Length: 260
Length: 300
Image 1 (cartoon, each protein chain N blue to C red):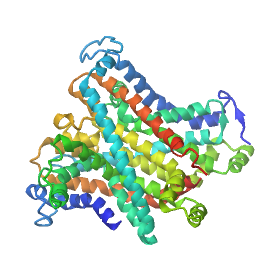
Image 2: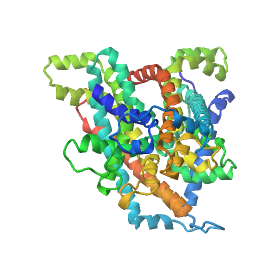
Image 3: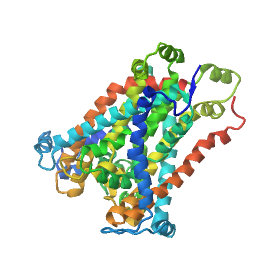
C-alpha cells in the first residue's frame, strides 16, 4: 500500500521538483535533483512576465468559492423542501435533478456559451460562476440528507409556527458535515472546470489559473517549463489545504451516508 | 406524519426556499439545452442569418466516420477507465483495511491527492510521464522490463492507454475512499457467520460483500461514466484540441469543440454535443440495472 501511495504521489513530487529545473533538466528525466535550488522560476511567475499569476489565482479562488457556496446554499434550500415535504410534483422535481446529473455542463457548453453571450456576461466571471451554481447532484444529495434529520424535530417546529426559513436555518448545523462535503466537492469541480471558462473568459484579466497555465503551455515550448510547474505547484496549495481541512467532515458524512 | 399539500397551495416560505434553485436551473441549464437543440437544427452559417435545416446535421453525423470513431473512442475510454479504476480501488480499499489504523487515514489521503489536481495541470504533468523516449514511464517501467520504448503521445496504439492511465491515476483515490467507507459499513456479524459456516473468501466477497457495497459501486460507475463522457480538458492539453495521431485520442467532446470552434459550424457542433446524450443514457441504464441481474437470488 505504501508503494501504491508512493506511485500515486510521484508525478506530483516530480512537478514540485520540476519547478526548480531549467528546460533541459526537465526534459531529461535522468536528471533527478535540480542543479541548484533557486527560486527564480517562482520569481518569474510572480513578476507577471508570462501572465498575471496573482490575478489568475485570485480569479480561480473567487469563482470556485462563489460557486461552491452558491451551489451548496441553493441545493440545500431546495433539497430541504423536497426532502421534508410531500407534495404533488415532488417526484418530477427529483427526476429533473437526475436529468441534470445526466447532462453535464460540458455537453451544453456550446449553447451555454451562446446564451451567456446573449445575456451580456461574456468575459465576465459571473458568466462562469452563475451557471455553475445549479447542481443536479446537489439536489439529489440534499434531498437524501434532509431525510436523515429526525422528522419530529421539523414537525414540532412547524407546529409551533416557525417560518420555513427559520427551521431551515436551525436544521443546518445538524447537517454540517454534508454541507462541507458538498461545498468542497463543488469547489474542486469549479476549480477544475476547463471548457466553460475557456470559452467564456476571453481576456487574460478574467482567466482562471488552469486556463492561463494551459494557454502558457500552448503558447511556446521555449518558455521555461519550470514556470508552469511553479504555477501548478502553487495552484495546488489552496486545493490541498481545503481538502485537508474538509477531510474529517468528508469522512464522517460519507460514513453516515453509506450506513443509512 | 407528513402533510400532503397541493403543488400550487405550497406556502410562500417553502416556495421561497425551493424556487431559487429551479430558477437557476431554468436560466442556466434548461434554456441553453433548448437553445442548443434549436441551434443543432440550424445551418452552419457563421455570419448573417442561418436557415432552418431540420435534422440534417444529425443525419450527416450518422454517415460521418470521424463521428463514429469518436463514439468508439469515448466508449473504450470510459469502459477501460471504469474497469481499471474501480478494480484498483477495490484492491486498494482492501489493502488499506489491512494496514494499521494510524496509517489508514494518511494512505487514503495520499491516494486522493491526484484527484485534486486540475485536469489541465494533470495533463501537463503527464506530458513528462509520457514524454517520448525520456518520459518517466519509459525510463522506469518500459526500459527496465526490457521492452522497446514507446512514444505514448504520438504512437496511435498508445494514445488511448495514455489517456486511460491519466484518468485512472486521477480518480482511483476517490473511488478507493468511497469503497473504503462502504466496506467499513458492512455488518460484521453477517461476514463472521459466513466465515464460521465455512464460506470461502472468494465466495464471501462475491456473494456477500459485493451485493452489500453494490449501491456504492453503482454510484462510482455513474460518476466515472458521466465524467468520462464529458472528458475534455485532459486530452485538450495533451493533443492541443486535436484528436492526436490518426485521431486515436478523439473523444466526443473534443469533436464537438473541433466542429464548432475550429470548423466554425455551431449547428453541427451542437448536434454532436447533444448526440452524446442517448449514448450516455443507454450506458447509465445498463449500469443501474446490472446489479439486479448479477445477484438475482443471491441476496439475503
